[in-house]
Length: 233
Image: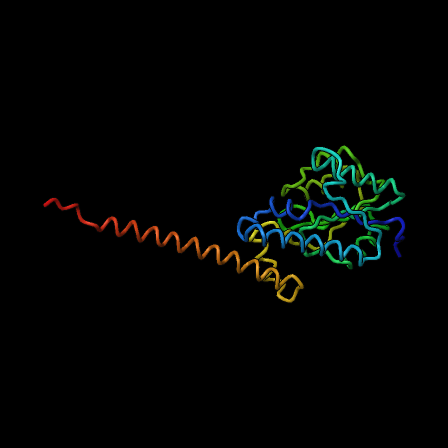
């Protein structure tokens, strides 16, 4: 059994409005729907973290310190370690794959392992479990965060420091309409399914309006092409 007092969850996130602004899906479903989706994903992560029974530390932009993403995340990790925590489970807030059972499973793995990753299907990670001895600030800061090379960078990190390492099942990061569609298609009974359905319908409506506009534009061009020369009487 893992020690609840020595393992904690670190939720690291933007505010919902900022999260929606930088995600690709916001341009497709609209500002209001994008904010709604980002807010639901953040709340989902917080609810699952609290339900896990582990201590939870939240770091939104008002608590983050540093310039780069790597610096801000590293400072947050070190702040949690300073509370006497030995194992930190770091979670973003854009993956419906997050669950309380996942947090509990990773906590158990960290009893015997140094590093546990939740790989995202786009090459990033949706979760990182790491113990204090395996953490190296310089290498953590230098990881190419917010890219599709994060997971492989952690593989290199684990090899370089000879860490005991394992992975969870690949999960979906909801950062584009394609990811939104794939998750909706594969998880029709999930609690997010209704929300995703509404957002995807908004996206389809926007696409239909664009197609109608293009059709109308082409029709006007064709009509202009068929028009005869002016008549001078």
